Length: 309
Image (tube, rainbow, N blue to C red; front, side, top):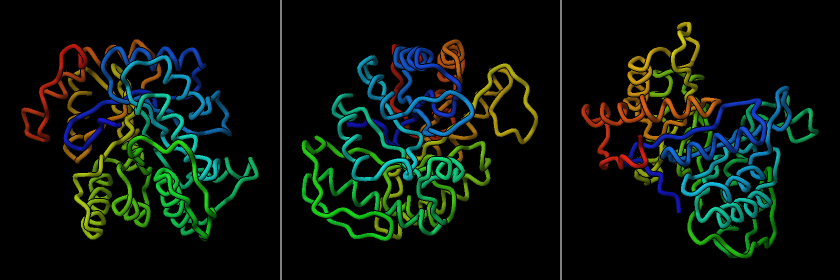
């Protein structure tokens, strides 16, 4: 079962990196696993101009070649897979990985991809309805009971899967708009935007929508993991407004701590090479943990030096 929670600071690798071969992806995942990163994720862009891997198949392959790191879709686009089929794939991946799978899920943000593949192109309202229905189908099938839903976007009738998951599989939503953020707070286990798209102030406002919706739904907002994708370029001076964290080691440390201060406890760091993953684990992440603890931004358990730099 996932060990990721809002009560501790965690770091991820992978995510928003493109153009990697299967071998490079494996090297990146295994290095992150050995260096103590908590999560390795893969994006879901089947129609693209750069080489990509299909995330579910690749994560299943990585599950057999990593030891402890959790694995996530970042994020699976609903138009590509029917929710009932996704439920079966997710259960299998979670089982094969020994309970290390997190399902990042999105309504589908890049309509040109779905148009190219001849898949459903939905309005904003239809995407929200589809996500709500998909979550109901996923959790219904994972319960082991026959599931029936006659929805606006998806329908299942007496559907079931066997075996059922041995524990709840977390669902993180990659959401940005007000209705999607409210749905996240109401139903999701985690929120996964990209900080470069919204900035610190935008992220702070969005997080308030998520936590407010959770409260109105009778949920503890602290039960929702607030994660974010962060593109990092250590040693590179980048123009203001680029949406990328970069600069010297102290500058990158400071920028990452600022992201934690907004309320994110899972930083998914997108760097494309093993060398950069190693440099962050050695020079940046321990200092971020220390600064976060010193400023009281999060009550953190003591870091294990054997697994966190």
